[in-house]
Length: 208
Image 1 (cartoon, one colour):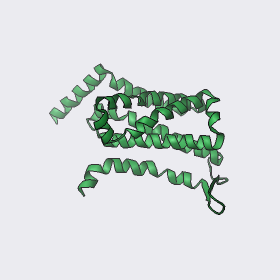
Image 2: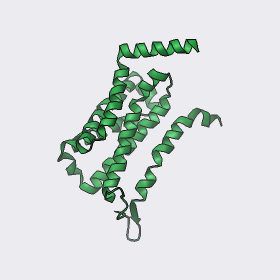
Image 3: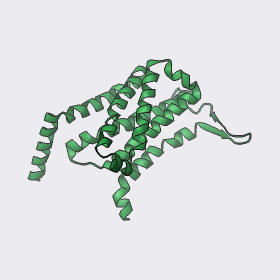
Image 4: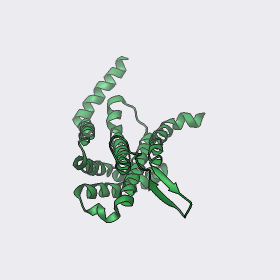
């Protein structure tokens, strides 16, 4: 019971991040009769999309959703005083895993060299490269080992979200939603704005 009380946050993130995998699994057909092969299930896309387009959409959409969610953690703390580092790490891991899945689907369908044929592909590829060290250091052991350098390394997430927004902006219009959320988060982070918000929050807490 104590374990659940201490870790329910990141466990909830892990469950939420894993559920969409069921959608992807239903779009794939694994054949073990003659070795090992994976094929797309025809007509599994829905919403007027092919199966491959839906795979791209679902994996990419959840990658940028989790990435945006991670970057709202600090603004959320400034506004409400609620934070949990390990939940944030779990969200970062979810971001990286979904980004890796998205990239793997792309190179499986298009080939690795296709990555360098368009600007949005290159931006997405660089974002994935940035997420690799962040993924492997999103744990308590790395925090202790890297100490102050851990925060510096994790700050690369800002570059990853910028490149991801470039990647999505060229493909579709939904990037505006994520750009607005991330932009508001950066405004809240401005020292003068942050100080004012936290002062108001503390004042309200004192009156309660």
